[in-house]
Amino acid sequence: MTNSWVNQAIEKIEADFQRSADTHLIKLDTPNLKGIDIYLKDESTHPTGSLKHRLARSLFLYALCNGWIKQGTTVIESSSGSTAVSEAYFARLLGLPFIAVMPSSTAKKKIQQIEFYGGQCHFVDHSSKIYAESERLAKELNGHYMDQFTYAERATDWRGNNNIANSIFNQMEKEQHAIPSWIVMSPGTGGTSATIGRYIRYQRLATQLCVVDPEQSVFFDYFKTGDNKVTCANGSKIEGIGRPRAEPSFIAGVVDEMRKIPDAASVATIHWLENIIGRKTGASTGTNLYGVLQLASEMVAKGETGSIVTLICDSGERYLDTYYDADWIAENIGDLTPYTKALQQFSTTSTLICPSLQR
Image (cartoon, rainbow, N blue to C red; front, top):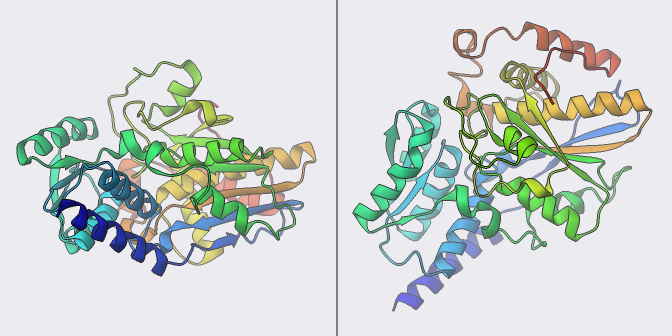
């Protein structure tokens, strides 16, 4: 009987996948950037609105096939929002109770979406507390703690099977610079950067992987020092990425270069991007794109040509009361003016000169 339910659950997830088209790869309109093409893979078009839809699907399949989720199992996840939204979607698809353990600062829109899909939100006062509280709830309710921060790097088939890296390279096949010089990604769990980096190596491609980290996150420090015990006291203000500890799913060995991106640069970049593509994106997209623009500027200075690919992680509609609210920005992020001016200059000169954190 248990196997029958699991079989049906897997069939439902696979059918949902079959109904979903791949996400678009958008070529950014940068007419003054000669010889270098920038592409944005738009993960905001998934049914649950973010890159985390792929991860949630993989995590559910992984847990089902491992025998961790059975009929009636309560699923618990620690999340800053987007993964929980996507997992709530799949939990509802399978008729399972779902609880998201998240910081109380999580965007209201994400909370509403989790509840829309029938999930419950359980709040803690700091992002560092989500792990222990999720474990406690899973034990208390005899449920399953999904633990994206441990299993993200192994739940996805990094060799191919239409993973995000496979999709990027397939979509790039007919472009002028079909093999990207760089793919740029920011880490939340580290699972996506692990998938991309492993795929690049497995396929023996010349592409390099640059991982960009926000302020108040330890991935950059871990990459530089190799110390996986490093922590930071404050949580990231760029929702969805950056962690106060080095997560098990972050595989430093597949990363070619890391950069620390100022939060003000991330937020300024999404406002700059809105003027180009006509819609809002989340601040993690700004972190990604600012790293791309740094690399593009450096390629121009070296006389190099090629392409750079990054991701639109989610829609900015989730963040109207934060990253698109001037008062919130002033109080939580600070002055965007230096970065806004630098981005305007980049638009005309292809050179990005701006105060930045260490590389």
